[in-house]
Amino acid sequence: MIYRYSFTVNSHSCDYNGIARPSAVMTYLQEAANLQVKTCGPTYEDMKATGQFFVLSRIGVTMTSPIYAYEDLQAETWAVPSRGFSFLRCHRLLRGDEVICEATSIWALLDMATRRPLRVTEYQPNFDCVETPDIVLPDRVRLGREGLPSLGKYTVRYVDTDQNEHMNNTVYADMLCGFLDLHGKYVNRFSINYFQEAPIGTHLEIFGETGEGGEQLFRSVREDGETNVEASFNTKKL
Image 1 (cartoon, rainbow, N blue to C red):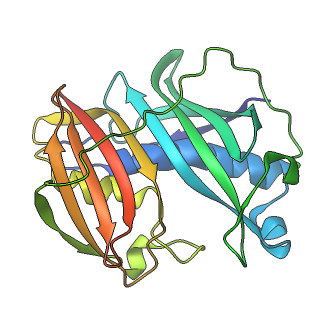
Image 2 (cartoon, rainbow, N blue to C red; image 1 turned 135 degrees about the horizontal axis):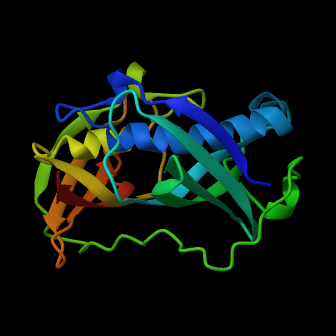
């Protein structure tokens, strides 16, 4: 089933251009999925009681228009039939009848105690999946393994974390956009690949380069040397 909810863009989610930050766009997309799970079940609390939780593995977002404060929009989301260890979900935002944002996300279900990934068959939602034959999977971001310049460092703080006690997946978009000059521009396409969690207090170092297509590529690395996320951001003039 396709789950829908309507909302008004929060002005506090907007940047110095007066448009919704990529982190806010991710929040609006994912909130529809959260509400579907909360409404239909099993809920976050149900899963926590059985020792399971979802983490985002990869997401790709494409926007055809910037989103402004106080706009009335509708979010839609649906789960896609999946197999193995990857749970697929589609998202979109609409301004009236116009689709202004589309996204696909890939999730992993983990055992809370061991962090072991669980198969799709170990999760039974109380809603139907929707066949989506033309689904476009999020890009796999590819960077060189050595020689990337360091752009700066970031420490995970209280305001970055969620109920899983690590940096929330939407916060990475804000962290990485902090290394972009977005005056007079907006992010119209981005992909983030998540590899390792970053609990509160984790020190990250951000590396980056410009890709062949002009996109900005990023890699964040934990203090233990593990790659945290890799991402790609494209921008467009307003």
